[in-house]
Amino acid sequence: QVQLVESGGGEVQAGGSLRLSCAASGSTFSINVMGWYRQAPGKQRELVAILDKGGSTNYANSVKDRFTISRDNAKDTWYLQMNSLKPEDTAVYYCYVLRTYGLTSWGQGTQVTVSS
Image (cartoon, rainbow, N blue to C red; front, side):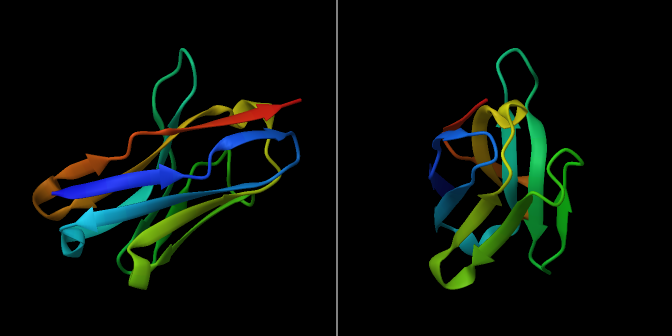
């Protein structure tokens, strides 16, 4: 089992920045991929950014060059630095891990609101 706890959401004006954190506990050795998804009202959950054990990253086109995913292995924590935020980035953001044998774990979600 892996437990995930997110923090860092909030409200910011367009053009501002926020940093989300996701702290993992439990069987963190089983994590192969970590990342962030988001879900806006009335929309499906979508991938924002992922980072694998080898350090490779993948970003949604809508956030490339604005968002950066990173990790602190010593703390079993990863981050999503979000810059140049836009109103369309408003959503609930979920951290996510893909573990051995295809198991997944999700955080509880944190609200990000960007006002124009």
